[in-house]
Length: 235
Image (cartoon, rainbow, N blue to C red):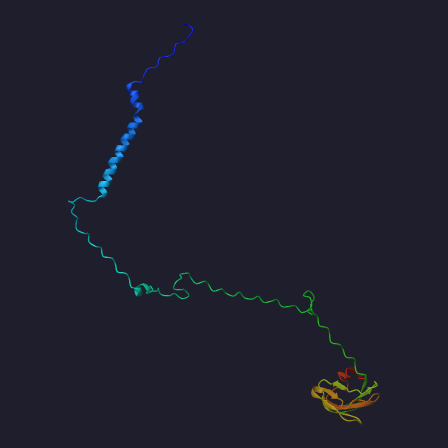
């Protein structure tokens, strides 16, 4: 029997342990009692006051403000003074008026015929008219104290009729008169010692005419003599 173990002996729980194992049922019983008490109190409060209850004086009624009439509700509030360019309901400042920008002018178009700025535009000289197809010869026909008679013989060498103008200058002299021999007369001017004679009818082709004039207080040799731009010979 020495080879076999002996089982340990089991003892019954003590008194404190037995109370602890039955404590949940005690707590549940206490909770049920508390709930029953609270239920009884609530039912008593719900039944109202007892026969000895004396109600106090009623509270004074608070006067309520009268409702505004429909006319007063519909009356609009007074408007503030209107500011120019402002709406009575808006306070935004007026937007600045946009100013129109000036339209730029287009540059002037240069003329296609304008000369370049680097080279000056030099006007061309007018064409020189060719001299008239005339021949003139000057000579003195007669002299006398204080004056003389001179002549310019004009010959048309072309094949058409030609008008002419003769000009003879005598500085310091005086032109007394002038005339044509044997043909219709023209017009002359003798101011300041210068004779200017303009033919009347044109001189026929191949013909000649003699212009004669009376000069005083001058040398028989004129300062100049020409007929339609051609110088006189023989002076």
